[in-house]
Length: 131
Image 1: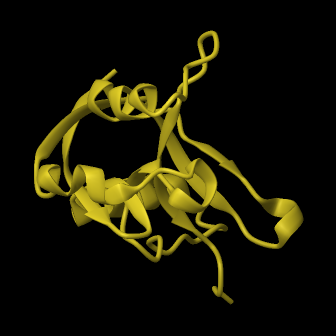
Image 2: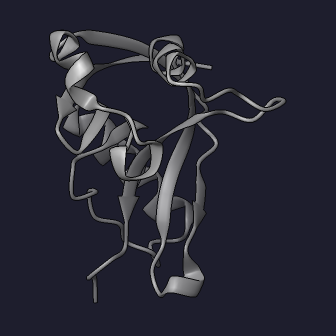
C-alpha cells in the first residue's frame, strides 16, 4: 500500500485528516477514465478527507483534540477504489486507508476494529448535484 500525508483538522463538528487537492483530483480523474469517461466526480464538500470522528455519530467531544490541529499525519491507502450510492441517485468514491494515528483516536474513544476491515476511508469524490 502506498503512503501519503494529510493534515489533521479539528472542528466542533468533526475530526478529519485533509488531503492535498491534487491527490483527490488525480483519483477522481482515474475513476472517470476507468469508467470510460461516463461518470464524472466532483470534490467532496470538505475536500478529499478521512473522517476520524463525527460527533453526531460517535458522541465524542472534539475539543479534547484541538491541540493536534494542523499536525501532519501519515497514512497508507489502497489504490483499488470503492464506489457506491447508486440507490441514492449519485455515486460516492473512496479509498480504504490504514492510519494508526486515526485508529488510535478511535480506540481511545471505545471504537475497535473488527476482523480485517479498515476502520477508515478516504472520501475522494461524488456525483451529487452533477448533471
